[in-house]
Length: 575
Image 1 (spheres, one colour):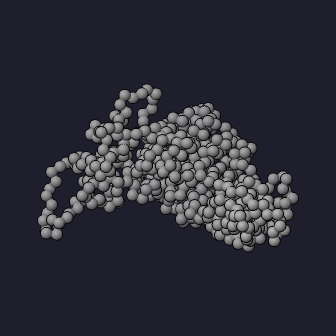
Image 2 (cartoon, rainbow, N blue to C red):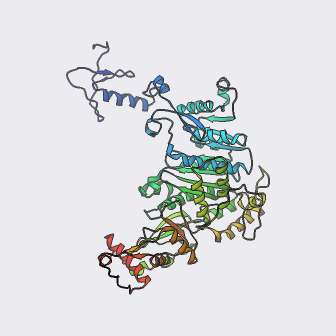
Image 3 (cartoon, rainbow, N blue to C red):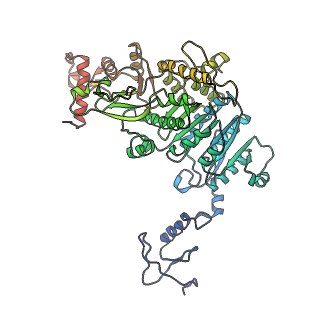
């Protein structure tokens, strides 16, 4: 017997490093299984293994310590209580990332714009964590929304209920917990929030919603089928993907496993990631006989956000499935183009590329990426309504991003954003419920809430979407630094945008890349205009007052020389 009056049982050596010396000195006993541990670090690991196996009721942190060390944060006039280490997912039950503030604000503007169409909206935050997103919806939109916050973790659900009362919001729980909910009621509540604790897939199968937001830790492909199974017609599904290592082509095998697509690191990798997620969303919707209309897609440093509107019916599903195509990408000049529709095998797929790298460079020069979403990523009318809502609610941080999205959707560098409330006449063009056509005619595809679309309206919608494809923004963008000419100083970005516009091309900046330019100009024309307005870089001759000799080569020769120089610098010769 030792000093603690327990029979000391030496622990056999294991692969985790728990070893027992022959001479028994100072030691510890496990409070759960009374095992003898010699070192304190081994004891901590031993207790954590009990916790992971579910042999304890609480974490290896005293409840009193956790309560005393809780911190209260404030974001957009919403107070939340967070656990210690709230910014480290591995060390807390309720993860809160302050860097995702832009994500929360742009989703709030999306819901506020949708609430102008019809109300009340049944909204779901499927992965609540601290519940801050659902709290912002209920606190600022009031009776226009009926918010449901869900989380599978019991500690997170308890924290969400505390945060509801902290913001004077009434918690509505299940019938089994009505007595507890009545006891927690407080006077002067601003609204109701339903808090549930179940798997997100189960909840989305049980209930129907008008707005669903998915923000799991990592990929969201495991929840897309459930989200589209019961979402209401003309509802909105927003998907936040934080698995950027796979989407940004750092872990290509993971992207192939989760999204079923082949990708490489390109200059337009952020837009490539957005189109990968939209393609996965479109396939999930098509499996449920539903189509989608992409309202906008945002890819920033920490996340990829995709927001789509659901269109019910097999006709919409078929039209959506046709917009998923493969992309041909040249590895030398990074020219790209979507493959042509059709089932026939093409004899020479290199002919589809505008560049001539296959004829001038040895070996196979192009690869096939995808499948990807090939249609538009933005809805200009909906983005303008989001901008108005951001100004109305005082969200100054998100307004520059929304303005950039509007410019990008129109592909015009000098557009003027209207910040006034849309009138009834403009609403027919901007409202996502109405379809904008080339002849300024509109088709109301949602005449009354709860009624399904007729077959004629569905066919008209498909026809109007076909006529609208000509005004869609050009896919992908070029990085001006990536295509700079050797020995030349590039023009200023604003000047170069004006030069492309004067040459007759559509052009705009893009939020995907601060030095990126979205244009419908081919890469050869892009480089020709870039070379035309670039100035030579003078060396020693400039200091002696000598002028450089006039260039005898043409613009095309200089462009081809720059491509070959970059190929030689990469050290990748293909024979």
